[in-house]
Image (spheres, rainbow, N blue to C red):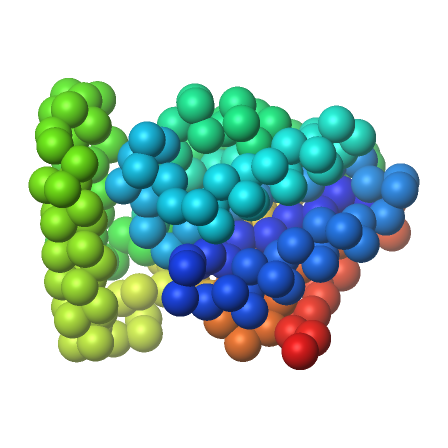
Length: 238
């Protein structure tokens, strides 16, 4: 039996190769798969369920078919934090809170996208707090469609410009934040994405922090079983 974890696919109409690779991954899920967890940033940008692009609706229909046999769970990322109940229902996905503790194969894991652990990035954390306010989401979702599109595109552009001037250390997770969350959730293992730095980090007291990678140049998949964690790279097939 296996459980799979992916994140940071950043699917968009401009990258059909990533969409194709993800579709192939779904087609090849083993029959003994227990579940699939998507740890945020499935999409490069999400401006609302009612504005989903055709390729995103195709992905939803694909996920829906998979979900008949394999439970699919979704945690919001910083790019697709506005994915709502309507899209989740169409996809057959179960929406999870931003931090979720689970038990698998006798071990305890805490799951999250990972951006909340980048506590040294003060400006981003302030924006993150604002964007998570329920009233801010309500106002955004009631704006005209064109306005929402412009806001999302400007936020993405500004984020890319600002990140060019931030150090790698600032944009990585803060070890103290990792230790605190493991302690708070009483978990032995942590699984997250966001940083685009796939690795299995050994921590004190036999704990681990597992990072799933992005899908810009190849797929990145974590396969978890009673034998442990296997972080895999999936080359794109032309």
